[in-house]
Each structure stands twice: as structure tokens, then as C-alpha cells.
View 1 (cartoon, rainbow, N blue to C red):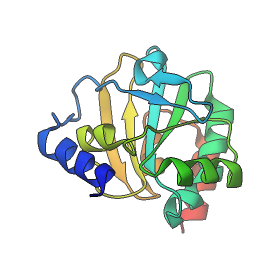
View 2: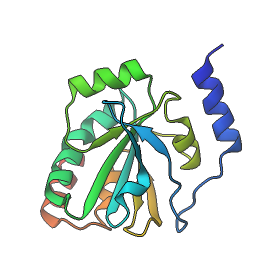
View 3: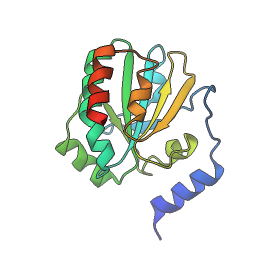
View 4: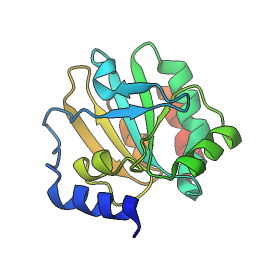
Length: 165
């Protein structure tokens, strides 16, 4: 029996979906050093959640852009990549593509946050304001561009638009 798949299916069936305009749903996830974290740690800043997995071509494409965005804007915004992946694949990804923003997961392949934020495509970006309100959710690499509507950075936005052409 595929336990992660069973947990994910249960989570999707029974999850209370978070809608745009509602308060974010908080979860306890862990970093690659196995320290626990919660999304609510970053209340007071804008937060971009990127739902991703190892081997996702569009996810790999946006990584350097997320990295640059985070370095340029970490005083006002946090970036958290939430991996829907096995622990082994997630750890390998961390060795292959190092970034300075947060990358979290859990033993159930983040099935609860994936279900609560109704994620069906990768990458999916969820933008949360400094008070914890969900502002938007966008799918695909172009979804990162939508985050810039809430956290403006004209120079970065121009660079990303060029890359997406």
C-alpha cells in the first residue's frame, strides 16, 4: 500500500480549502535540518508559497528568479518552497539546487498544505499578505510574475518578463 498516496487522497477529500481573501491555513513543516517551522512565523511580511517537487521543469526554471527576488526583497517578503516529494528526492533537490530562501516539506509529502491550498499544478504560487490573508493563487512559471503585483520590484519584473518570452 502506498501510504503517502493514501494520506494525500484523504487530505484532498477532507481538507478545508483556503480561498482567496481568507486567512492563511497554518501548517507545521520541516526544513532539511529537520527543524520544524510554521507558516505563521512570517506574519508581518508578505509571503510567497511555491508548491513544487523535484524534477518539475517549470519549478527548476523559476528557482533562480525566486532566489534573486528573495535576495532583493527579503526585508519585506519571505519565500517558502513547499515540496510535494519523498524525503529522499527532497534532500537530493537541496544538494543539486541550493537557494537561500526557505524549502520545507514533511513525511507525508506536504499532502495537507497541498490539499488545503487546492494545488493541482506545479509550480503553484500562493501570495499571502503581512496579516496572513491569502491575496492570490497562480499556477505555472508565470504565476511568479503575479506575485510582483503585490510586492513590486520593477527591475526584477522586467527581467522575469523577458525570460518568460
